[in-house]
Length: 328
Image (cartoon, rainbow, N blue to C red; front, top):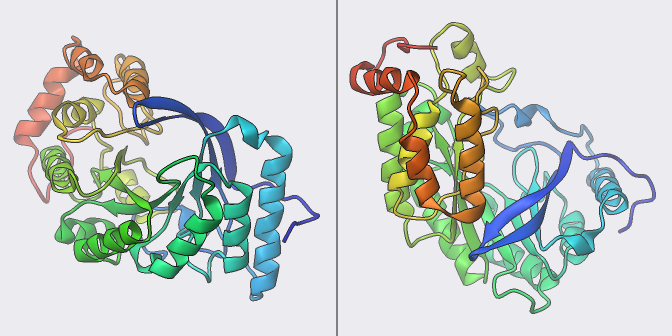
């Protein structure tokens, strides 16, 4: 299925990713799909991004048009890795028709593909078929199922995020993916709603420890305030503050696994931030670390002097559950 009409995806950009000690050229694509089947997460605005149609064939053509746009704008030979996102789950056949899934696999054959999905859509037959179409022998593991686990704590995932699945669901999906010859990437969300800074730090450290040895990749996403979300409504009332960048550094420094992190909105009021003076250097340093794996860099950033570090330490020690944040 090759579309004649081209349609620009929600977003598409080139970058670099660290993989097995090397830095690879990576193309990231966010397709506008049929929409997330869950669409209830408290912090996510992608649930509003959907192509409204009742026809599976029409949806497949629309998605194919987006892939055609990608092929027209980028030389795919330049990339070793492709990261695929949708409004919800790439392997949900109602959101992304099977015909288009197959077209994606054939288009990116011979590359590493990281495709995001909810755990309930990880089936052995689906993953094996996609991997078979994708694999040409270049990489031992050409496919990674990326799952937004967010935390290994079921109460936090349920009450603070409303994710709609359990840690047991995730571990079952990871087992299926591994049996189908795919790797697993876990996305963690640092500081969802209703947690103090200290609680959020403790949750991330606990989650990273639990995941060690059970998944191939871990990415920590410091929470940002997206528009039209429940999280935004709390933030506007002063009942939520995005995490401190100091906290992000402390988690990476102590992580028992290699964890990547791209602090989107770093230094901005809706994103992870400190005081505004040290934010740029720390945000840039975290991104550099994600490409090099150099923890000495993280340690050096934590040793930086800035007046806001004492504020962060005070917040960690004195912020209490069920109270308004101490700072903005």
